[in-house]
Length: 300
Length: 113
Image 1 (cartoon, each protein chain N blue to C red):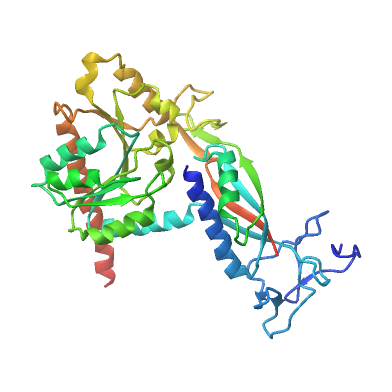
Image 2: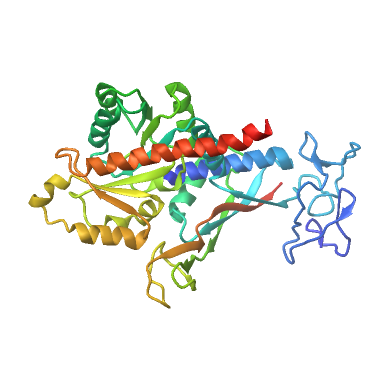
């Protein structure tokens, strides 16, 4: 039925073809992708030969000043653009055998202190670069540079997470060596960074024992997205009523595959295990690079 | 407030599609949001209204089609409905569950002119 005047019966044509679907009651038409209609500069549909077709709108007829609404099916993921950038980052990291980690936690879990200790322990064994995400200040990147690794600060302003495009730009500026370890310290936030892939090999979630054991249940998305949980500040356990087994149990209820290391940047407990986990990851990145390069070499 | 960047991504999708499809105004946006997606619907509506001011989607209506969470038990392969991204298998009691649906965030369809 014509939605302009109510007349019925006429079959709608789109670029010379009969429309396939129509919505009963609404008078609106679905239009197939790439049906050949191109917009003229005035926003009206036009045929390839330049004819303006005023019958091609949803109403099937034109009345001055009355618009012709139509339906467009687009089926696009809201995060598609971020995921495209993340894929590009991941390809770049694979090509250069860079092992990238996305460190996520709430503010104050001890991420930066842990990074400083990690850099001190590994800087002679491998090239390391750090991307620091915070809403404001470059305090953290200054701490990392003092520890002996190049660091780039991203201030997100009002943003609550890093996204893959920010990381791509930071990686360009960092001028990283092949076979590097890239540590990305995300904005302190257990909610938003969960949904944004940066192209990292793993998300590492840091939970400190000064927080509640039930944080994994309260923020399940982050613990589901992570591959490793570092239970930090374990040197404080004698002074707290924190139940380690309960916290790990909650985390594994969300993510049964989650690896857990109890660690303390202050006492050094668990550091050896964490460093070994990183070194294994770096070796895997190098294997991945080789297996990725070989088919190309055969083709080329 | 990552809903703000999600809302901005939606606007970008609308603007990209406007160039491809040749429309100048968006009247209604249908989103498909899974029950297990990391998004707060009310917050997304609020942000959507903010970021669409003065653009092609000014005063556009936002319709959210909610999709139920679905999962599979990796131990006994039973399929089940999931209200949270974790749970216990009603058949075998395993906690080793995998989300198989209802975590999507997509722009499905538009009413445009």
